[in-house]
Length: 251
Length: 251
Image (cartoon, rainbow over all chains, first blue to last red; front, side, top):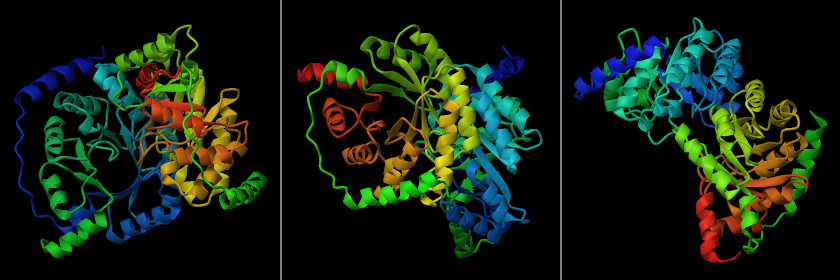
């Protein structure tokens, strides 16, 4: 067994036994807090190039952190975004995470060669549930190595996991060199919950960030996610969230 | 424009203008009709190796045509199936189809190197909706070329398409060298419908087979699918369908 895994297992047990969830109240946020946290997302299977153009234009206009799109749209997104500071985030092994580590690595290489600035990969949930932690670690580590200086987020698909599995998944992701852990793909039973965001925040060290994704459709939810530990918000409702902010008058 | 695409467009127009759906009555089927048509499927993101073992054992016991599983489970499925005649079918670009053609090709190569007997790939629906038919053709053709003698099924995800798009998708798949067209991934709004199976059967030539997948959970539905043009049934309910057959007494 990989020595990292031994540490993961003992640390996971400790967290599982001692952690208690307490919901933190929503905080007031500024326009900049919101725009710099939003990954403006269109991962629909039916997204057209026109949809991606709209997404990119909105992201530029509102100064969102990034667009999050499928690999086959990276070239046109780079083109639409031009010289703007909006990052291009793409997804690997998405949304099921059950392809091989070799292919996840090839996907990463291909995405970066087309200009991806960040990689959101899906964990192999089957192997996690099998307790094949070495495999789960290797799967992430291979992508991280391939990505080099490009940051990798690991999507744990929290809604499919027990709390113990969520903790283990986050600790393996950190040990394997991920820069972020991410709650959800948006394609499973449900997206981010406050409980999951808080647990993930508690589990990983301060050098790792947490991305809440899926089901974040209004300002109130966005604020709560941030208050409970989310650094980034993966959402297709960024424009609506900003509108709530202007209605809400909290900035 | 690829000359195949010109032919596809004129043929699609003709089919769209003249085709009329008429539901055919369910036919009686034998145990062998059913078992030889069933692709025994577990594509859950959370499938464990124990689940895959069960799937393989059921497929062997009931002499199903194949198991349909994620790429990362091909090695253990080959192992569990041993010398049996049950094929190993895997999925490529699954379930959204929005990765690049290069990666779909690499996935195919990787799957075949691990022992996959057939490849079920998902079409790029965004490019189809964009009318970028050359891209859709190229995407399939690249996988078909990589697969060589290994048959390729093209999943059109019918529930996301208009009838015109379904017809075009099937004709492009045939022109690009697919051996089967398949209705659904089982991960979108709904699975196979009789209307889609009949339309797809009508659209492709007799050298192409039709796989109905998703939502086929009992004998009655299985019979109707076959009567309306399905050659293969992608289902996780194969054992239940067979039980219906023994209760039903139609064999």
